[in-house]
Length: 284
Image 1 (cartoon, helix red, strand yellow):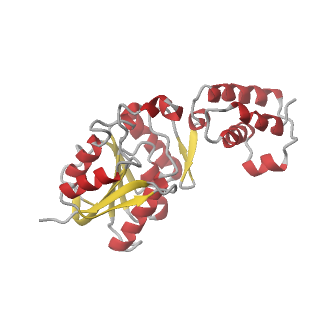
Image 2: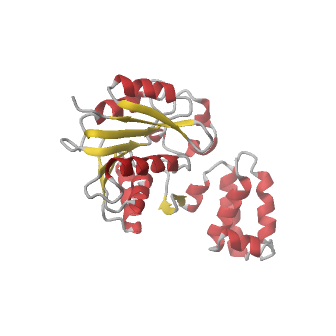
Image 3: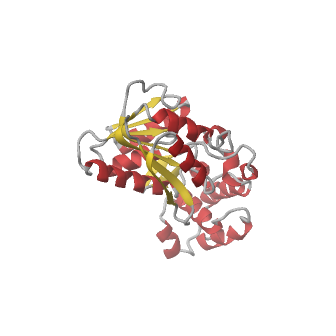
């Protein structure tokens, strides 16, 4: 029978992956019900035939490019276990920077425990951003919306599993179902990839919904719509914070400034690339 070590050595076959060893560790942990530390402690452990057959089946799908998160049905984000499927974008580590900045904006605006601080997460997908914020600030009033009913159902499933009763999830095409509501902070990881980007035919994104990835106007159409619409849903002095492509910082800053936001600033992701832009709304 093959051992844990034997299976991990098969990482050399995953030439399309940026993290082949990690991919196999995650799959083995999923099949064996063990931690990564356990794999390193017991490399000579023999995998039984049933477990090996399940691992081989997942490994074959990974060879074909299917994302590890889809193979296991879960992805960790902000140390939270989130259920994922093909109906939404898989949460990325760089989006945790958005959570960090959002938390800092909340603290500077109202103090970390102030009652009534309200947040809107647009295009919530799995609910990752909203639920991460709720895990740090349970007193915040957090609303999360998505246009797709399947995404709303998935986000609600994650919310219920984590027990975050203070997060309200509903179906809405951006601001459509939020007439008259205003917030202290609006955050979003919207579609921002140019439909002509060749990377859409590569890697994990081939298995993710295009509606969560691409936007017209070279990727800026949805950000433009959010920046324009957010002005009717932000309290005076409230913040808009969006994630965008590494090469879109200048364009998003110009877009925010054109919509009248002040204190416009772009922050970097963990690789030092421009990834988030924020702006403050000042009522006339």
